[in-house]
Image (cartoon, rainbow, N blue to C red; front, side, top):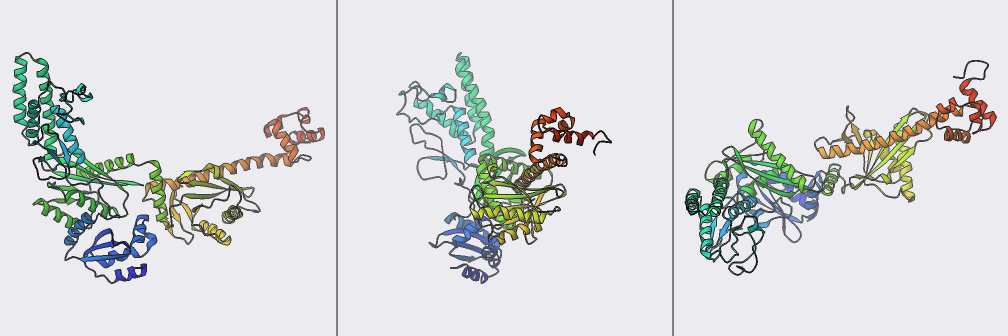
Length: 612
């Protein structure tokens, strides 16, 4: 279907809740969404394409046709969307990449040497399964804690095949393993230890500790102090393990706190589990930065995270209100068999917890994101904000600096892939003006720069993706007109400052202002570009102005032209030194007549007051 056909089909949809499935030419489902009013929601994808994010435009470009399923209620649409996303795993839906449901611990007691293993689901057979637990990372921690507490093997050796073949590994030397690969340890001893693991996984900590303490006392009475010390350490480890097991295998938490951070390239979803007011565990997942709004993303992630789980918290604290918050709470409550509350705290201790979860999400995302990825994401957002066809990889920024009419200069700084490329910086001396005129100056500078581009001059022949002009919409309009007169179509925007001289917005040539304060990274980036253009222009202005001041005073002396002025400044370095020189010193640089004229200019002719 063409874009117009897709628009027409969307306009014909009813204003009813439901689910829509976007499909490509091969009829693969590439996106699933839900809507309160299908007509309004689906139409948004095919109207005002310039306002979409880069990812949304990419998704829309792949749509060949779409189907809808009308639901009786928003709740039914929510359940249906969740089921369809699980089934199709669409390319453009936000998905928890490592989401395999709540993991279990598997232990096959039918094997001669059973091992603890983490699995995603239970299966028929002789194996026993414990769980499910809160997440893959915390389940792995629990297995590690069990292995350390009971000194069970964590290596890749296969028993009984590898017993006695090699010396024990580093885990044995570090005291983390009993060294079950040694021939002196029996299979019966191993099975007794595994039985302890089973009892611990079933929560029978008191009985296991009682048995171990009795064995420790016997060892001490028999003067087997090394064995007694080993059993004492095992008891301590199990006491700590009991607290971890309470967190993981009890109801997930009294309260779970959601954090979400949208990064330049990667985003992160965090769940903090609180039990009896104490932080018990943390789960987090890294995601490619999504195309949906934050409330849509959080809704989808909360659904994906909690619906596969057998145990749910009583309260889930959210970082932002969700459009389907009531329906989602109903879905989770139905699953839990009791009320599950979804809340967005505004102040107090609960709001502090949400901020902490958000900080954790930001920390994880930024740690996992390279500088190159952050820059790519920032340029993508800038391109989307300005409705460009692609992210602006090369940006040129211009600024004018003048000191009256005597010195008018301009700068051009270049940022390539988000970084300054100083080898491409250029500066201009504005000619032919009798008074400062920023608009005429900008027109002249832009014309000169892009005339050289069209001529293919070396060093000037790279075309920018975006022009940024210091000033408002009028400045941008002047630059745009200069480009159009040369037959060029390059996006131009003005850099608008606030009262504190910070870049607060971008201005289109037509007068529209585009705010950037909502995006701190973009705000900082554009501010850096504007400051760099200003710095480069002012530095050149000061250089030109200094030469002008020095030259003007000497140029007023009869007989001193450019060559003699240059000779005097080269030898004596400054006007002050020339003023202090006597005729003899001056005559060694210029002829005697000119030396006398220079001396008389600064000291008078002897017949009156010095020349002022």
